[in-house]
Each structure stands twice: as C-alpha cells, then as structure tokens.
Figure (tube, one colour):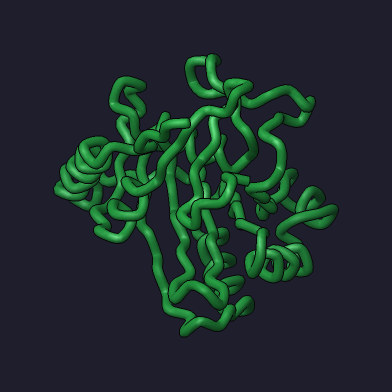
Length: 212
C-alpha cells in the first residue's frame, strides 16, 4: 500500500496569503462571522501544548497554543473554551475526547454547554465530543463522504482529516484563510493517507501503527 501527502504545502501557503490580505483591511472591514466552530485539542503527558482553533466560516481567526508543561490542566482549557463560546453568538466547541479532552468535555456538560440544559437554553449542544475512532457515518448511519461524494473513510479520524484537505484544496473554491503558523504547516504536510482494500481512506499515524 502506498501513501500520499494529505495536504500540499502550496495549499497552506495560499490560505496564508488570503489570511494576510484579509488582515490588511481596515478593522472596520474585517467582519468575522458570528457562527464559530472552535476546535479543542487538549495536551496530555506526551504533548507540551494544548491547541484551540477558532474558525469562522472560511477564516481561521486564530490558533491559540498554550503550554501545559506536560500536565493536562482541564479547568484552564475549559475556561478558555468557555470564553470562546461566549465570544460568538452561534458557537460550537468540538473537543477531541480521546484521552485528556474527555475531562474538558465532562466539565462543559456540567456547566450546561451540552446535554438537556444546553438544548433548553440554546436549542443545540454548544460542546460536542469528537472521537476519532468512531465510524465515519452520519446520524442515519450512512457513510460520510468527501465533497465529490466519491470517497468513504475508515473512521472519523480519516473523515475529519480529509475534510480539512477538501477545505484547503483550491479546486474546491472555499477560499480558506489560515494564519501563518510554522508548526501547523510542518505537522499538516507530514500527514499521509492511503487506501484500504475496500476503498476506504485511512490516515497513516506517525507511530507506524494502523490508522485507527
């Protein structure tokens, strides 16, 4: 099985250029959507930084990295996430709950950002648990596909990675904008994908194990 680079550096550079051009506009013309999608990746023992990504439609407003010194500080990450949720009217935080993120999500449930209290107050869950190992299916248990409707995926991890690829792919004309970030560019361009015998796309992990 051969593997290929998921996201070419040239796509990231184009998105960086759009972001920089957008931020040359006067502040009065830089209008961010009130519909925010907040990605939350919580550092554990093996990572130094937790990362929060604030996306507003086609613009990543910012990546926020903060050092946890190898210790997961759930309350700190929760507090920062809550501030992001309060900043935008229509906001959803999507937390990677494999590992340390589970504690952050649990606390957000306690605070009423997910579950019955959230539905009653906001009409929807403002915090969502994302598990990479889940099947790549929708709420009706149908396979999730790429923008062309052609590809299916081995798991949610593969689908979510490919969704970023689709978003950055200039041929799809989403006009993605992301802030220049050397660490993001390096990590994103190191990701490889391949196809299983059944046609599903799988993301190759860095440690060489099966991409589950």
